[in-house]
Length: 220
Ligand SMILES: [Zn+2]
Image (cartoon, rainbow, N blue to C red):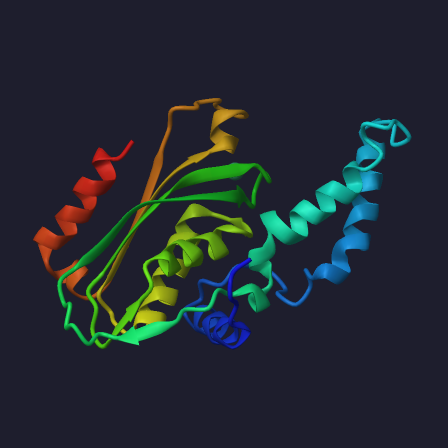
């Protein structure tokens, strides 16, 4: 497991509400205490589609699925799980752009409850604070682990990073494949969707902005 910071989580939740980009969810609902309730509902759901819950292979599926929901797939619905973002003073005065490429993530489409899999590309220009680089991966993962739409998760990560890093100079791009496009409806498994958000100098400096687009469009 990783270090968590529920207080920071509360602050980020309020920020996203203020920015009107918070997910439509009640964030105090999904806890370890929900396990039994979710297990019972999975049991009923599987029964409704005709599975034999007495079969040895399936008997524990409701319990396994409930644990998966709470602890893995949707742990980002509980701000008590917000990752700790230890920041250090930028003593070495690194003030050039920093790029973090190909942060792989898995999320869930809130319209169809199937996978969204992709990569996030982040960039920031440090001011007074530097954070451990793996924290960027952690924050992407936290917001991915809830039912999502790609446009919203892009903006959630963007605003959270502006707050945590204390700078407007943030850029984010996300490339993702959606299983709801690949395995249902139009059934196109080659489509990749790209979303971006630029702040501060990444928005005003066209060359810097182009660098991000180049990175995204050349990615696989
Ligand atoms: Zn979908």
